[in-house]
Image (cartoon, rainbow, N blue to C red; front, side):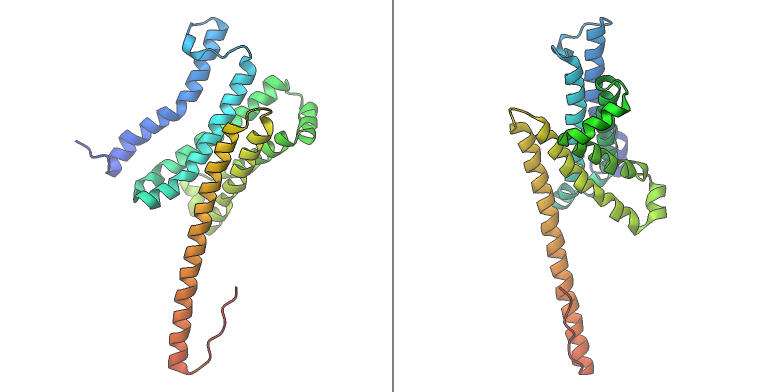
Length: 236
């Protein structure tokens, strides 16, 4: 029997299960489309009175949910002591990019009928589309460089590049908030979740920076004690 804490169990049991769970929204939309087209009848997968809007919104919401889920991996790994959670991060991020891309492509092909001039007018005229489109553009290089080969070739630049996920998530939440016209409770939940995730990262960064400063101060005072030279002030 494999224990769930082992690498083999994570790779061969937990990851395939997470993969299937990430596919469920797409499967539900396909079932709804089949029901709408008359190929099959699944009452639970009905797309409602406005199927175009339902499909587009579902793709966008699940893209944002998975993007925020990706950002929870590191806090959970550190707070719960589960290092193997990192094995899920790339898959979750790529699924987030998949749903967000499908959200945009559905808007482009179905809503705008592949009319690029109308698309550009929409992007320029409606702020929520502008920020959503910008978020997609920020995510493209992250998806392209998500391979292990890209990580090895880019080195530290890879980590700096992938910090673009933070402004992309902010823009994604802003896109959702500005798009909603009446009930803003759901987008506010996403904003709150993102604020907690970013706040935790800021707290961790400042704590580590303070720890590094203390260690550097100690090294400088030890050097001053050995050499008799004054301690140089650290830059703020």
